[in-house]
Image (cartoon, rainbow, N blue to C red; front, side, top):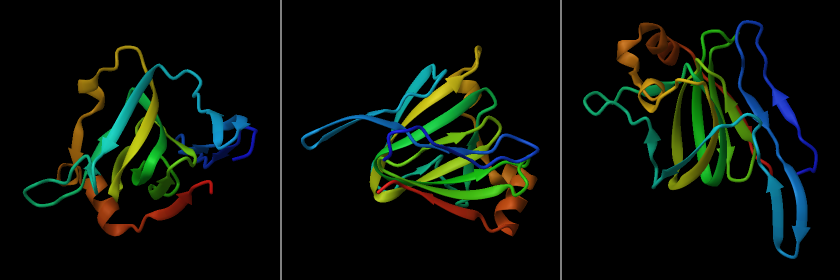
Length: 173
């Protein structure tokens, strides 16, 4: 990891795109490294632990349909602390709406903008992800963590069934 902040921004003209943010190393001692992983304006921290090959949100139990979260009042800033996790992102405001993004432990921070459908799949041994979210005033767990089943959203269903996701792997090794 280099010692200066880098942001790789995949911008679309229509809607905010996801970003990959590297963080700053500020100290090394024998066998120990220190990093500043702060996200400006973050007002909420979630520690998300997947035990084993978990999927979040889980697939529909009846038919196995994919499900997604979408936050209208929250931006996620996700850092894999342990293990790896693959994210599927859909945003109809992007020039290409469907991406698959791979995060590996101690790699980049994935910024998911408001209004983006997203789901994640952990490695077989699980993963731990820190989310340094930015929640708007008035946002609640109930309003921001509604599960959307693709069978209930035709546009999302058509996107998943008809488009191949563009794949991005982001790690720092």
